[in-house]
Length: 289
Image 1: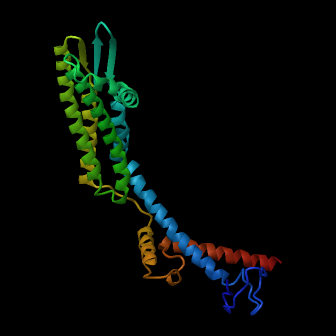
Image 2: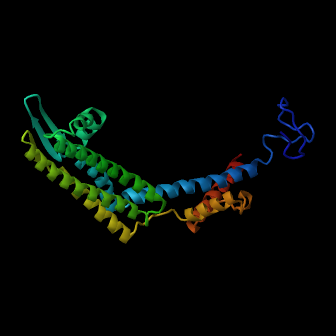
Image 3: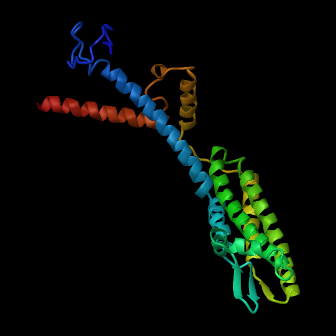
């Protein structure tokens, strides 16, 4: 450590408040300049935070379309709780019922259902049906992943709300394709169950509901891509953000910036009025004293 004024070295065990060489009070040396330096950095930091908050507001709840999209993101996952189909297995040795939705798929993946279905894949009676049942579980799981990726894509779109909505639309289109494939598998599952003689399969509405949910998401995102998303920034925040980038690159220094870094005419007027009121108050105190 050294004295900021005379640059003489100060020992680690020297805890005195003043420099023994020049007498400078170390704690308050350049206090005003340091306070101005911190005030400028704080202004720039708050601007960065406000920009992020403005983008988040615009992307999630900036309008009717954004609110509808946010609801449908969770709605797509909720629709996966509707049964896609129901399978009843009735034999002399067992009598089991399988329901296909997101909850049952989670139980199947975390439990032993998939391994049980895999064990009978070579069976002449249940093999084809078990294979279709396994595929159905994986398709429901894939749609759940796509639903989560939609939310992740919306969060990523905050970087560029106007353009990255197309990324969310792409995931919605993938969800529709997986939903259509689940309908095909469901039809084949019902046919395989009927051919086995020991399995009864009944189609549900889950696949169609999931397709409808992803289709609504696709339409909403296409409309937002065409219409664009308007982000309302506080005046001067984009300028402050640009200044922050230049400081990080070393193009300018904090000391070169004015204080405040940026202010509108209205803000300047308010600041001058506050200063005038403060000076008036000080004069009144002096006269009363």
